[in-house]
Length: 306
Image (tube, rainbow, N blue to C red; front, side, top):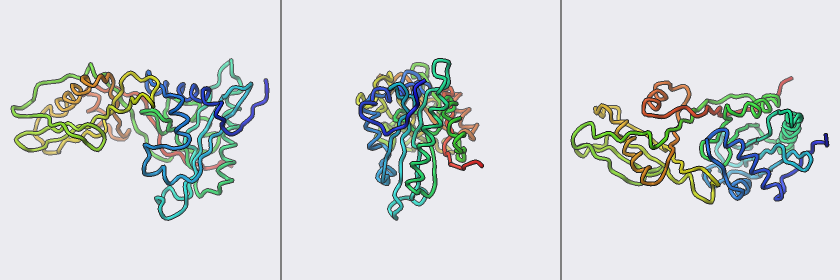
């Protein structure tokens, strides 16, 4: 087999890199893919991370190549060390994402390629002289962050290199909008007030002038310049009920109001997110019609072995 080489990303790699990124995205959220422009643009800037992105001092993208084919790629960040940067991020180096082909009969060198690239990543972090080394798997697609458990080959590469999961785990859930019922108001006089919320369109349950809770849904995940294909995906930005609302069935009714709005918007699937260590919240979302899609392990810290 021809030798593996690791080098900086070139613009001519953009199509192969996007195919590799989309293969990983599709294993997390069904039917989702991102455009070449989205992938290339995210290498230079992450506009959605409007707090942390301005803290980044350097960005480097590396690829592992064999037979003129990109078999693995990684994107690294170095955060500044000045007082404008949040304390946890100061002088920190991050493997922001890492993608590689899994071992297969037609690609027996997959693990070797991943390890060679990871070695180059650690060497870059060492040259930067960063205070701490962290890792993630946040690709520029909805629902893809942390290290999704459907990427065992990436997890193995992280662990072989000395990264350990030191953070928490989140569950990504999905529901078909068509399957979400729109029940009648459980009590007379209950109405849904629509407004602009912090994370999308807010629907507030209001009874006799009192707000009992709200749900926010974001339908902007499918902007055509960002996604090449995703159907019409939306997500739950916020879902809050007042502890003393006193209305049985309020959660189902409020989610039903959101579903009616999403159907008008043409959205066919809805994502939700919850901490893995909150079984009650997970059970409630399941009862409302969501199913677990993937678990994402967030917070990976480099702790060299030996």
